[in-house]
Image (cartoon, rainbow, N blue to C red; front, side):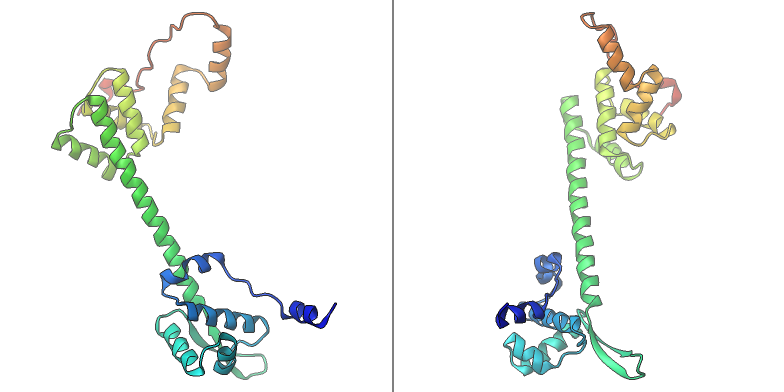
Length: 241
């Protein structure tokens, strides 16, 4: 092993989050500040928790005055702070701390998730209105829009659950929000809040399971389908609105 290879291996590695590399600009970190962060992290891994501005300037290629300016900006922008720690020897030592940077990065990630969820919810809501208008074969009235909004916002019915209620109404040839509302209300009374729960309850009422259905289809191969259309699992008499 030659001296250059030995020196390379002895220098070690500095680990950096890929998420930070992809999003550092979004939290207000500049290219030069990122380089300073990397140098400080590298020194920290060697036990130097408070590298001098001269060392940072030498390794970054920036002037020492520029390093001072950037360190001040990091603190001012709440991306870094200087902490004074009392060590085991009883002496106080300063160190750079980047917890604020990662808190801001995680907050940015949460905001991204929230924004994506809001966009998804908006699309789901628009799909609900479009499906109902398509199945009813006409535009919805303002009162009908208000009713559907109430299902989504006040009653917190999931869009796919409303779509399933629409399917049940169409199968019964009942093109009415009032009919759908009775279906949704009946499911709510039975604490059925997801499509999977409704389907499971429907199978229970029919006294069958997916396995039973599979066996039955094998036993009746070649025979006419006499089951008829699926009937919504509620009784009109359960609730009058």
